[in-house]
Amino acid sequence: MRVIIEPSAEHGSQRAAAIVAQLIRKKPRAILGLATGGTPLKLYQELIRMHQSEGLDFSRITSFNLDEYVGLPPTHPQSYRHFMTENLFRHINIDIRNTHVPDGRALDYETYGSQYETMIDEAGGIDFQILGIGRDGHIAFNEPGSSLGSRTRLKTLAPETIRDNARFFGTAEDVPRLAITMGVGTILESKKCILLAFGKEKAEAIAATVEGPVTAQVTGSALQFHRDVVVILDEESASQLQRRSYYDEVEEAHRRLQSGEVK
Ligand code: GLP
Image (cartoon, rainbow, N blue to C red; front, side):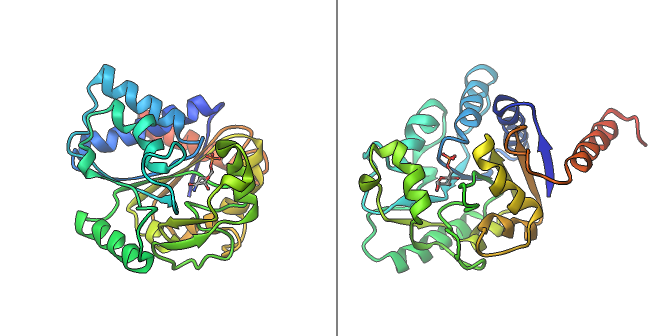
């Protein structure tokens, strides 16, 4: 895992956007895995800015979102499809037919889950997965206890997640109890992934994910098995990491390599 600690969420999001933009320029038909929640918002704003002022071209990009609440139609203001439309898709030139968000109203979720997996496979697999993390260390909606080999399926939300997401719905009673989510195994198959976390309320989850043992109780920790993960943090979310000085050293070494100071 490469751990990059930036001074703020703004800096972290710009760093992440630069990595995404580099991939898009190199591979205009890239398959992106997208996340929702408060964390990636600044990253999406930066990608929109790059599209509008630097011509970053999304016209041949395909996207797959991680998850969706069960029972919400795509037009519901709290559905993740609506979130993506409002916060990214309608501001860039992505072809909406190439954007995929799990269907929260599929009738047969088992069949639908494997269809979603097949769609990802047929597109060529996810080149680049963007991830946030829940306070309990979950990625997508893979709540504590999720199998680390899991695939796209139905998941019952944990009480902490319902409480955390109540801020978007008004009350906890209004938060759906079920979601359809990519599995941990699905996420581990992405070719590259970026985990973003900002703010002190994520510090514990990040310490467990990056430095703790791999456990289904903290599904983010499964990323320790991923072939290419970049973790982008701000000072607050990094505050409980034990090996902070080493991560800074690694970044310094990267900087020197890039600037040609090290041959
Ligand atoms: C939800 C989403 C996750 C997200 C998490 C954290 O559970 N399913 O993908 O990472 O919330 O959200 P936020 O970024 O708002 O803290």
